[in-house]
Length: 338
Image (cartoon, rainbow, N blue to C red; front, side, top):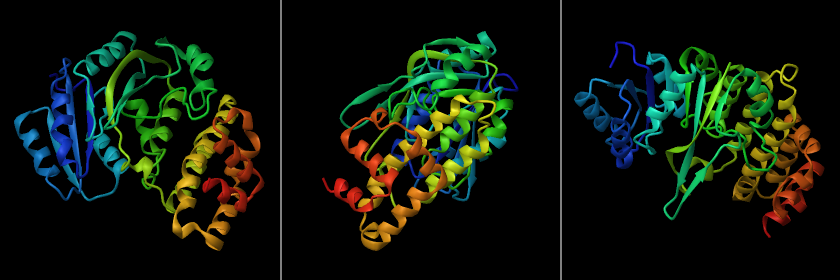
């Protein structure tokens, strides 16, 4: 490995002892070797920290950094502070990667001297594997190609609940010098949707990007993941997420983002509202007050007034759109129960 590695791989770790070895072994099995690994122990209370330390003791490319618990994005940002590679990427500690992942991705980065490289990924559940593919055709895109073919579909491909470019940080390489400011603009309190706040603004600034027609990252998905755990706090996170997008996105420079953000905000609300408002704490007058407040919040009101119902998939989703648009809490509760 050269004194300055080509790639920095950042792995946030928090209480994933049972699957951490599989993750780290998949990184060390890479056919590409010019990398450093930054293991960020985010205050783990199980054996994860000791296991991470044992890997660092056996391989000089690995550093283990311990910090107080601050959340996933806090660990990613801490890892980035130590990164020295020309490019940076992320692997979540309960996932794993294909042995050839970084040979393909770093090869594309070096060949095209590109700012961002993306690959497909596979969602792994206890019962099946589902490959997730970007809508953008595989290949190299210069700035003009990005503006014409990628930017118009990044957050909304035309099919509801389907991104044109996956928001995940983990199936991408970023030129470190470009990515730095975008990662540190992400609020640390966000636990849902935070990846996209770094990914999409970075792509908008990129001079070029490369999309690979290969599924190289394996994302472990389960009913207990953050995506499936909803509570009242998710509503405040939605607001923070939308406000941050509004602040970071220059719609004058990128008018194509206006429609996409409307559909993205509606998507996030339809992802979070049903499970949140099904909880006991959100029933009765408390729920009604909260529902009306969310429907009146400017980015949410703007989104549900701006999207077309026939662009939304599923009868229940169409019904929810109608209820949120017209602030019909009673009817919303009816559809939640049926």
